[in-house]
Every structure is written in structure tokens, then in C-alpha cells.
Length: 104
Image 1 (tube, rainbow, N blue to C red):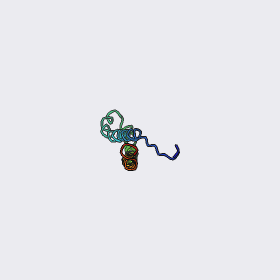
Image 2 (cartoon, one colour; image 1 turned 120 degrees about the horizontal axis):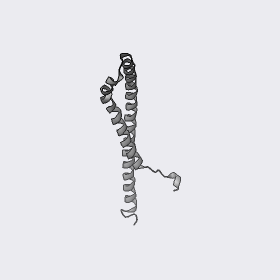
Image 3 (cartoon, helix red, strand yellow; image 1 turned 180 degrees about the vertical axis):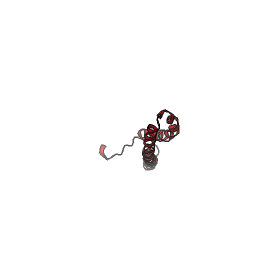
Image 4 (cartoon, helix red, strand yellow; image 1 turned 90 degrees about the vertical axis):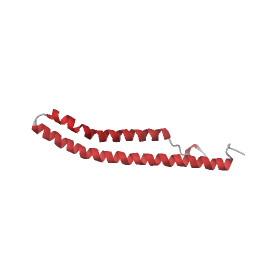
């Protein structure tokens, strides 16, 4: 078998991606907590009204983005678990075939 017929999985990258997506998800969820904190700085009622419209729009896009991040996180988690299981299964098959110490 040659170099091009092997699957190489970067478990470190998958773990890092999973952590980063969780961090992004947490940050998107935490934004809502700060909404009331900034309302006082908007000033004039007309500016406050426009900012409220902007924030409501942003909330809609943020929810959609959050759903996408959560879906991607689930896919990364599923991929990671599947590749880890496959790695263990292949190791077990190789050990069974060649003996636990790699040969007879």
C-alpha cells in the first residue's frame, strides 16, 4: 500500500476545533446578557430606537449563526468519536491478525 491509499486523521485538530466551536457558542450565548448594559449609552430616543432595531436584527442573525455553530460542533464531535472508534477497531483487528506483539 502506498502513501495515497491511507487515511490520516488529525485528532488534535478535531479536538481543537471542538473546543473552539464550544467557545464561539458560549460567546454568542453570552452576548444576550450584555444587551441591557449598553442600552443606557444610546442616548437620544431616535438613536436608541435605531440601535434597538439593529440589535433585534443582530439577534436574529446571531441565533442563526449559533444554530450553525452548534450543528458544526455536533458534526465534529461525531467525526471525532467515529474516527477514534475506527482507530481502536483497526488496532484490535491488526493485533488479532498479527498477534498482540506485531508478529508470530
